[in-house]
Image 1 (cartoon, helix red, strand yellow):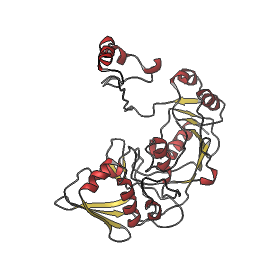
Image 2 (cartoon, rainbow, N blue to C red):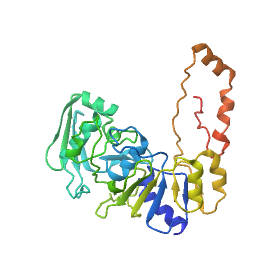
Image 3 (cartoon, one colour):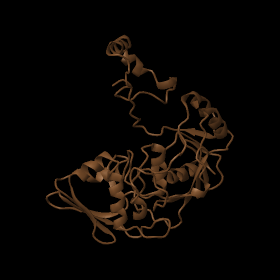
Image 4 (spheres, rainbow, N blue to C red):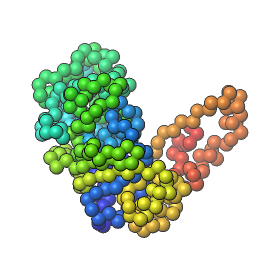
Amino acid sequence: MKRRAFLRSAAGALAAGAMAAPIHSARAATPVLRFVPTTDLASFDPVWSPAYIARNAGLLVWDMLYGVDSELRPQRQMVESEGLSDDGLIWTFRLRPGLAFHDGEPVLARDAVASINRWAAREPMGGMIKAVENELVAVDDRIFRWSLRSPFPKMLLALGKLATPCCFIMPARIASTDPFKMIGEYIGSGPMRFARDEWLPGSRAVFEKVPGYVPRPEPASWLAGGKRILIDRIEWLTMPDPATAASALQNGEVDWWERPVPDVLSTLEKDRELTVDVADPRGQIGLLFMSFPPTISRTFVNQNDMADADAVPASGHARIKASEDGLWS
């Protein structure tokens, strides 16, 4: 497969960049993407687990009411339309037609209600909405209404936010599971089906394309727009040893490595069959907690020039560097 065609296929398969990876191969010749994730998919309940690996897998299997685009604006995903009363207290949502779970059952408003309730029990913004809630009810099969005691202007952002846990819509029978216990079924309405019979925790997780999935008509933009899957199967292969992952990538045994260690980037960049890219130009937020006594912590800060530290790319690699705000903001 040509490099450009492979990248176009892979981009669709990875839900418009939600699992964007910095290294991929042009050697792939089958409709199967062999992907090396950052860590193992040890448990798969993206509401119960705050792990991003569970969220990334969840974005393939479950759909969301809203999705954020590349400008971090919430856009309709499962929702066809929404309305807000003049006083800002009553939100009314209408699901778009043609939504179906992988077991063939239609997605109904009651599924959305049950899923929102489970998500809100684990998510801070959801808890804030629940604190001012009058009722959340299904009006009919496609319409549900959320009545509040005081306005919540960030409603759409809360329902479409990317940080864990995301508001994934599950069948009501699954969403009724205690939010502090893991679900036992993995039935979604997203673009791919989780092949549970092939799941080997610590080794492999498999996702298969859902032929009947109907994407939105808009162009894909991060987690918004149409999720058009051009690959039949994705195999997540756990490789905790960086040397093993690098060797597998170079030998064409895998196609995509989500987050290679900086030590091997320079070597991999020299391979013409590989493409190295930046997963997210916005970077990530990290925290450093000083667990020393206050006097020692102050000494550390005073004795180290943080401006000089900011100027040094992480791990010595030019592609990985501090943001404009700095490593030590």
